[in-house]
Length: 251
Length: 251
Image 1 (cartoon, chains in turn brown, yellow):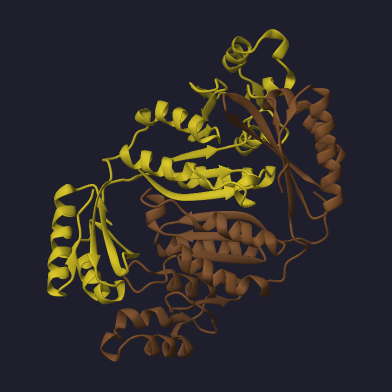
Image 2 (cartoon, helix red, strand yellow):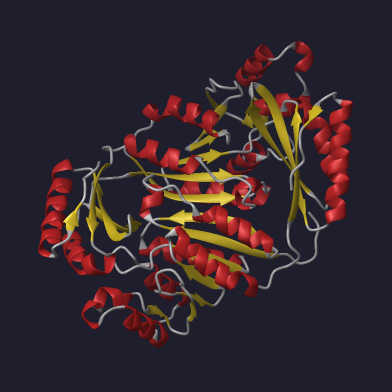
């Protein structure tokens, strides 16, 4: 879909618990939504295990391809928290104890509770900029175009909310959706024509089955509110031509 | 963790709706769990948009690296369903109408409802083997080591349940978990030693905050039940040495 220069991002979810099925990831959807609000297009996500080589390879592939990369997970105090060492290796930077992060950690714990494991949370690639953690204190950080965030959802969310308005995004992505009570296969040909007439709008089609009825939600996304409105008007006309009942529009 | 030859897999989630935040993916966790049950290790997942080049690149990267690849999404009748064309391109195979799939579709719809859009769902890479869809009929398929499944969760689940016991997996992955009412940072050093003593078991650590108390769930995973039991016994001993309350074990 033609637009001026888009600002793009990828998310890298790090953690065995997601790939084992133990935990259902909750971070991707939050980041996807938040990035869209500030005009950054999430183009790809990857999930890798707590494996040094896998994290290094993914960080390097993604940071070379997208404007921003957001990692989640693997920055705690235990032996399976290896994200920072891997990110440092990906950048070819030494892993060093960040003085500001150390100060925060030492200020948070009683002196007798400061231990080597907890101080590991201050180890970051040299030159990292801290990202505040208002929930549990141990900070995330930015290095280059990579933002290293916690895996615990409410900590990750608080970290992201603190930085998202500093991201240099494009125009926000707008969206309108319209449910049609008609099966996808009956609306597909007309919908393809609507997409052809509205090249600046990304038109998606999602089947549903609700109250014993088949239907299709049409979603129009883009940065131009008028273009989206025009596309939705065409979808309404298409539904009328098919005799399909139209549900309530949502944004 | 040392083991005999592991059978590995990747999941490729295809769909703009996941990357826009509109939809929270529900397929990864289901596939992760089901693969573990038949001894296949899910090593990586990727999410890409409905973009031909992105799908081709991801399919080729993943099928070259892992024993099995499972794609979800993009096999419906609408213009944004481009998975099959991309998978065919990734394999360098022509996209052809599969006679068996066409027969199923023509048997399902009334003659007047058979249209070009619906017949697109029979277009697959040449040589594809069908995967049954007991829910909504339009089949998935296997080509090489790539299994192409629907995106709608209950359809994807039915397709996967029909094939999973035909996958050539290794021994099933077993798991036991033990909650400790102690912060991660207090248990980390001892836990690293437990991991060192039990190299055949993968020991993960996950913080929680529940009923106003901080805690850590320890998860031990592997294929050897005795080795897992030994590791969990060591974790219990560690908790006792720290004076930490131990919660209910789960598998």
